[in-house]
Image 1: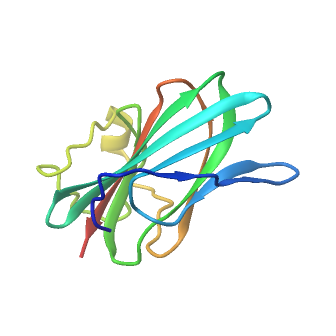
Image 2: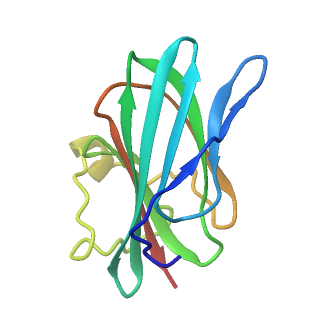
Amino acid sequence: MDNNESFTPQDTLIQGDKDAGICIGIWENMEHSFQLEGSEVNIRQEYSKISDNARSLSFSFNVSAPIRFSLEILLPQEAANACAVLNKQVLIMPFAENWPQETVPLNLTDCQKKGSAVSTFSPGEFQKINFRWQQGDQLIIYLILH
């Protein structure tokens, strides 16, 4: 998972009878481009090293019209914690306690602060995020390593 400044173009759309999406198994810089239901979709995937044990994988969406599809993102086995942020709001809570707020500050809602954290992330497994993506959406997966 080294930060590579170049972006590898990918043609990664997978379509089934009821679902379409892309599968992300490598944390590196990439560009994904495809057409789905008449819409042009371009996704810029950027990998970043935040600190010795913190990484981020961000996805910037450029779509010609709002369109629903899924991202399936592999959370590395060496993950000690992770969360997902969509347009600066926490979408998937960290799966472990003691989030390093000083390294990766999270903007939690009052409801998220009061309740017990529920997360669907699991190290070594794919996390599916099915969403109606719009122009300018940004999804960031933050990863804390052991």
